[in-house]
Length: 124
Image 1 (cartoon, helix red, strand yellow):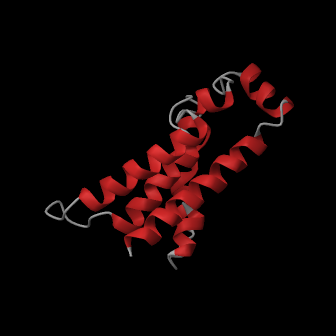
Image 2 (tube, helix red, strand yellow):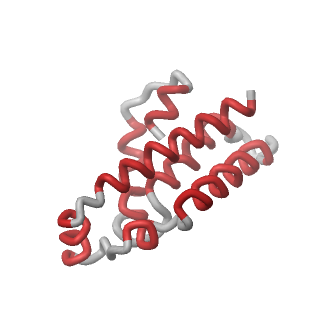
Image 3 (cartoon, one colour):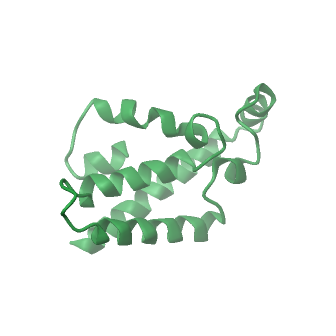
């Protein structure tokens, strides 16, 4: 989310704080990958609505395109499926570190950011 916000020339010290709970599949629950959640938040930052009466379709279409692209690349959207470790347990956290899977996460974040920027650029 931070990289896309900066791409959009939006700067806030709050962005990393807001996104922290999404890491590790939503606070180590194995849910949606934090890179995916961040991508959705970044799309909302650009295309989201300010009032309930505003159109949600541009945002939804961009999110759907992003999810399709990410899942086509990685065959999954959840942290558990992407890392194959249960980060809710100490053993899973240790396995994540031992296997050096942080590099996988860096790849997920990099590509999620690229996909979002490309989708947003296509909207212009």
